[in-house]
Length: 319
Image (cartoon, rainbow, N blue to C red; front, side, top):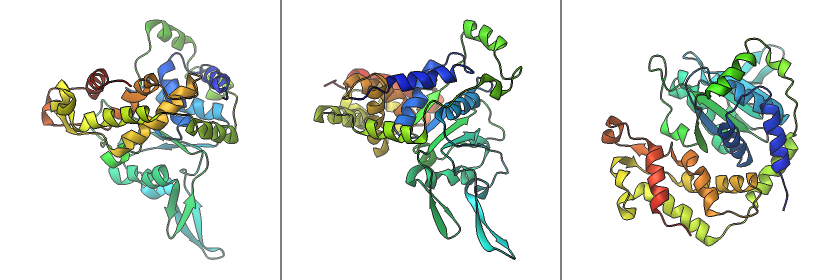
C-alpha cells in the first residue's frame, strides 16, 4: 500500500498560502483529480473560486489554461482553428483547451453551443479541429465555475454537459474569522505570484496517483450498494423515499461509475487500501447532486437534491 497522504498535505499547504479555509472544496478538487474526473464549482461571486482553481494548478506543476467564458465566445476560441498562410498552406492553431489544467471561468456566461465545445475533450480525451483529431494532455483536468445568482446574460448548462462533471461542489461563504484573515491576505493588495506557490508534484506523479487510485480494492457488496443508491434515484418508491415524488429523472449510468471511482479516491485520501461504505457516503452528494433532475413541483417548492440524497443514504441498507 502506498501512502499519498503526505503528497496531498503538501499540495494543501501550498494552496493555503493564498486560500483561507475552504478545506472541503480543496478536498473535493483533489478527489476529482485523483479520480481523473472533472469538477464543476458553484458559488456566489467573490469567494475565490477562480483563485482556488489557479492555486491548485500552480501547486500541481502542470501547464494550465484559463478560458474566460463570455456571450460572444465561439467554440473555435476554445478548441482552435484551421488557418491558412500563403507560405505554409493550411495549418492548425490549437486553442487553450490544450493544457493539463483547464480553468473554465464563469462557464454559464457562454451559450450552450460554446459550452459544448468542451464535451469531446472531457469525455473522449480528444479534440477535433477541422478534419484532424488530437489527443489531450495527460493528465487532463477541467475545473469550471459558474455564477448561480444571475439570470441576465447567463445560460444554463446542457444536461449532457453537466453529466460529464464527476463532481458538483458548492463553495460557501467564509466564516467571520476567515473573513478577517482574508482582509489582510488578499489578491487585491498582492499579486498572485507574490504568494510564491511552488509545484510540489509533477504530471507523471499525478498519473501515478491516478493509476494507484484505480487499483483500490472493493467487494461485490460495495458494488451492490452503489447500484442500489443510484437505483433509489430512479425508483424512489421501491426504497420508500419520501422526497422521491419530486424526482423527474434519476441519475444516469455515469453516476454508478462516478460513485465507484470517487469512493476509491476518498479511500486514498483517508489512507485506506479498499473501499468502505463510508467512502461512498463521503462523496455521494458531490457525485449525485447534479444528476438528479427535479420535476415542476420540486422546482416550485425549491426542493434541494442534497436533501433527497441524504434521505436515500439513510434508507438504502448499508452492507
